[in-house]
Image 1 (cartoon, each protein chain N blue to C red):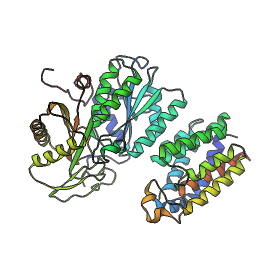
Image 2 (image 1 turned 30 degrees about the horizontal axis):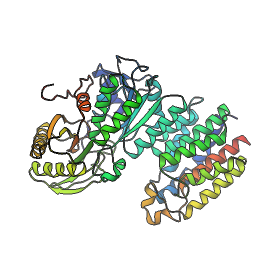
Image 3 (image 1 turned 30 degrees about the vertical axis):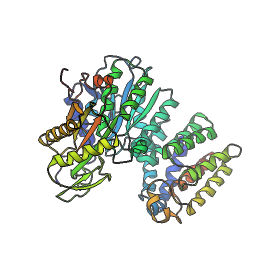
Image 4 (image 1 turned 90 degrees about the vertical axis):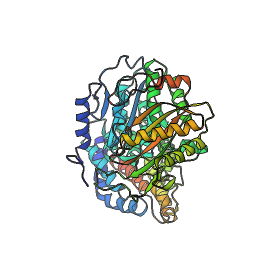
Length: 179
Length: 339
């Protein structure tokens, strides 16, 4: 399985759900998360072998493009070079927590990514996806501590985090192309 | 609003084309045209630590104007008011860094920090020896006990030049990082905004300010600061700003302060020289000697009116490096009596 097939599938998934992601983001942020993810993944499918995650970063721009790019770099290295998925995603998760100054429970992409990484250590991808989905659903009742969401009413309680939603899509797409 | 440009899509490339064709000290990088690097380097990157910075465009001449002998080795240029992406900075680091290693200077703003630090992490995965050095000096952004949360402001130019001159001497990466942190510890800046800039992206004013008010402590993108003051004789404003700077980082009688008076783009040299002279006199009344000033519009935000005052209390070593010769498109000769 190649990274090319993965990014093709991801772009197709995001293009179907960009409006949903924008709507989730509009409730607690800039309202452009879906557009950002779509711009990045569209550029990634046209990029040369080995440079797809970097192309995603360049095109999506901004902090969230960089943080999602760190996950995609590891997925690309896993698919194209056989790098260990758990080790890669664990490194990405650690870096995202450091750079974004967030941890579990802060209503962010980490709430889906961290439980997926923890599950992946001893379990398969399907179990990791289930953990990410559960983590995503928990963000609905959380108050944000970082980013624009911390300034909206009640820290955005009642709205599911768009970043956590995207992380689930990244992992579901991986299962889709590797199954 | 009037703006002399061709299109928002091409403006950064239009500017960079003009920059490299005008100045023989600089050229485009081979990894990406958004990397601006020295046309020639006396020492190679295996012997000399490389200094790079990434920043959004729209603030010229910083930072590309400081690429050249004695200051920076390269500047990675982002879109207007937007940090360059992490992979673009990575391209710059990979192209420029040799065995001596590199320092990625980062003016502390959230996008620059995330993308810059991510780039150094990715670079280290590739075996590139590089260290990020966050720079911050704006006293209006956080109190002294939370200095590390301050924004990067024009006083960071002290770090560029002092590290640039020290790197030219062949010092090691660890030495330079320690020197950069020491300069950062002795550095304070406070800004005053007079008129808003016009965004080249939207054609709109980036904030509003009544005709008779000045905003103290505003950041380079219009970030909020200390508060509003009435327009009066500029010496009163300067006096108030110097008091705040000295309250934040006291200097004793008999000490020396290197000074930067930076214009934000729409403030005249006539005004900046008046501000320098008033700053010098206020310091003199406190038995502090103002020396080796850098005066002009270097960190700009389009046609924004306003200025900042920065102080560095230098060690002898820092002062010598600050006054060392350089050859870049925009860094001025820094001179003091006897030099």
